[in-house]
Amino acid sequence: MSTRIVVVGGGTAGARLAQRLPVTLLGEEPHAPYNRVLLADVLAGRYAPEVIALPETREPVRLGVRAVRIDRAARTVECADGSLVGYDRLVLATGSNPVLPPLRGLRGAELPEGVHAFRTLDDCLALRDRVRPGVRAVVIGGGLLGVSAARALAALGAEVVLTQQGERLMERQLDTYASALLREHMEALGVEVHTECRVSGLRQRDGEVTAVELADGFVLDAQVVVLACGVRPRVALAREAGLDVGTGIVVDDELRTSDPYIHAIGDCAEHQGRVYGLAGPALEQADVLAEVLVRDVPAAESSRYSGTRALTRLTLGGAQPLDLASFGEATPQPGDDVVQLTDATRSAYRKVVVRGDRLVGGVLLGDLAAVGTLARAWEGDEALPEAPLLHLLTHDGGS
Image (cartoon, rainbow, N blue to C red; front, side, top):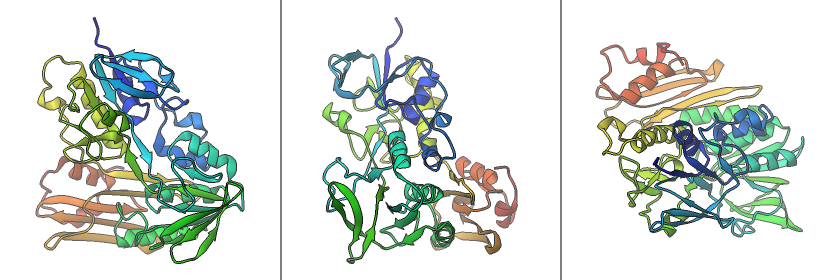
């Protein structure tokens, strides 16, 4: 008899596993699995929702099914509709939830009219229905998600204000210079950018948002507010089942949880103390787990997950497109070698950090011609050739 594999979650990781193996996939959203990275393009109107659909899975996905409880003794998953799904192996790919900041006027997960998270296709479609040219929109959060949302809203003709509590935009991915270039790019699109700016509350009238209050007392009028304050691994199902949970669901090199019959992959999984929250690691984890699940013996070394070293690349499309990529440690330590190339006329910037004979980090913005070479050097973690460091940034290794 074949092994019954049940996957909870139809995001990037769960869908990838379902493309590799015949599984029962429980997807909470009513939509077929889609590429979350492209949501900003749907919001901006560049893509129709069906365009971002992921490749079909081996078996049909059960859509609109929310798992509410795991019975580890009986090896069943209870769903919100009362149905029970039995498993021999269970895979949790529950993803992450948007972080809702502690603001006055924001209570629990019930958002006032006009206030939106930006995590799902439904979030995206609801925003698109509400935004019209001239609408005043405030985006809270200047990370990758907030920058993408602000650009998309500007493309729809909204008057956009982007607020960031930190010192600069996308401070997790970009260094000071690249972040300054990004800010110039956003302002050229008509986005008003405020950094070192803490939002303290929301004003409402008749249950509808009217303004955003800043900690310094300044008030921003708003008809639309987008919460882009990061994400948090979705672990409630695992925690209630008694599985080991840190920041995410703790897994070993076979992506196995503290229950030998349950695995976790993607944004919800914590491996060696790290939660990635990126598409690249989610896909790699799903591929490794596919190999693990087809074996009845302990996984070979090649089928173990040892972590992901992946360059993060993003293309911000539209009338004024912008490519950026980052990896590793973009801020050098004493003794590191740094090479930077800047072309102000093209708003292009390249930087790599080398420690000894290893590439340890870098940032590229506007010109990604060298990204192929850098990605191979970074992901392989091999000694660099004894060529001038400038060669790393000027050689077109294919993008």
